[in-house]
Length: 363
Ligand code: SF4
Image 1 (tube, helix red, strand yellow):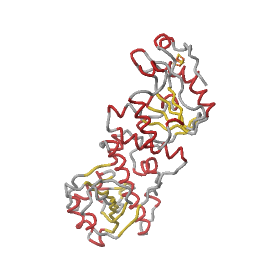
Image 2 (image 1 turned 90 degrees about the vertical axis):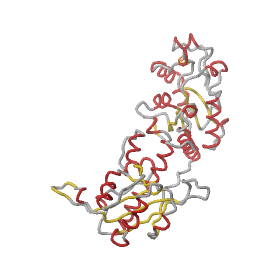
Image 3 (image 1 turned 90 degrees about the horizontal axis):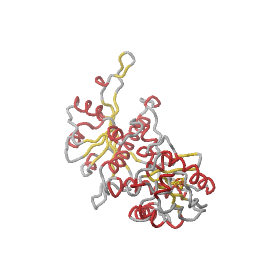
Image 4 (image 1 turned 120 degrees about the vertical axis):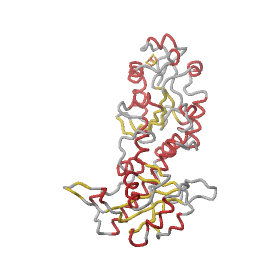
């Protein structure tokens, strides 16, 4: 399907463009990449996604999604260049989407539409936010949409590169019909010496549940169980690998767990990860332990603009782990407590690994 080369539904664009930039790629493609609008080079050549952003798009497609760029169809939300490269107006987006883009997508029925950037995402899913939905499959009336950042965004903000790489890996998995490796963990014997050589670990404390007038009183709670989650480091020193998550779990009474953990919790060279650290900080302080060098996945979720900051909701949305709720656990049954606490600490660690890439890391 061609876009009418003489289309003038958007008079300001029609008067300014050299040519309408046509969709590029096979019309029976399983994957469609939807960009924003053509730039100078695209307007000159008539081909979408040429230049630096196009090279980056091909890199993500080939190296991260493991897909062949020649088998993907590329088109834009708005298919004429704007004066001074301004962002297309809502009216222009609506016009081109309704007249050309939606009918093309409806006739193609691709397996997946990759929306690059906010304009493309909003054109397909008006209420979705890119920061909250990138890398996730969204069901829409026109088909499955996976949003990610525009490849050009990585040129100006290197922190987005690892985020985009993960998104494209997920896009490849979705196209191939592969399921993401589920997050798993194993509880191992409580051996503190193994923890000494790791650079970071997640910690989760379970407590008694004192209540006054039916309300939980954290200032009266006593620590009962502790679980710690970590991954082994690979010899190169890279902190994160595909190593499995291991969990140390114990009753605090049984092995003097808090006393043995104290040097590690206070060590400024070992990073600790908590979810809602306010709770851990207060409890540990009451037990004579000053938690140092810690990261909080609840605060990070807020900083990253997540819709929710609760551990259970984040674990379900970002890790695919559905955890039991507090009230569903029989707290007299050690097996159940261990499973609950291990899941909390494993998810906290896995969330942190995702968040740290998104917030800080380039590679
Ligand atoms: S942007 Fe689309 S709808 Fe507007 S003039 Fe160009 S081809 Fe026509």
